[in-house]
Length: 224
Image 1 (tube, rainbow, N blue to C red):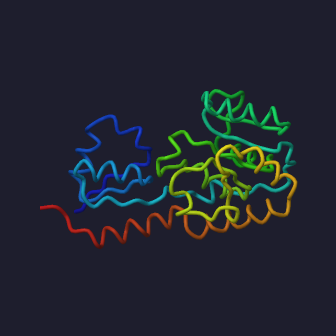
Image 2: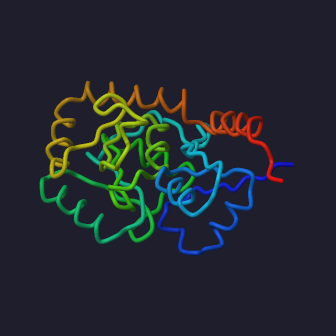
């Protein structure tokens, strides 16, 4: 029997030394950010694999016939950083609807898909430092709904997606300019949304994650 330690959170959650102990006690570990992989390896864990968290296309999917009332949709917990970014968009005349803890409305289950369908652009804002190789799985969920995704940059993002092709991330300080450009170019938004949707279905569903883990199980020798 082989044992696996599976960690889907960011490195910020490694405040408990028991996490390191569990990883070292298992035959192998699977984590969803490169920053987490490096942290576990630096603390003695072996056979640590980085695999992006998957998305379920039956749960997160496009919804047709919903009016796109807003320029931008943001889904995620409200923080002071996110308040500043959302405020700058509103000040620039960009219409925004926000969902999640701390905002007026939440968007869980099918409401997530309906909320995404109501925006021309789906915005992702990091809850970790941008110099960490880590980003939220909400990006994948956005893409699975068939939306045009704009995300704040995080280290290594280009290792998983093609910028300006499958989703977009701006240079520092250019978020507003990028969003305004896309809003004026609906064909570009449509192209990016479709390419991102197809990329998720091809490479980042849970069955793809399961395939990778099954291959690891075959290769890794148990401790002892």
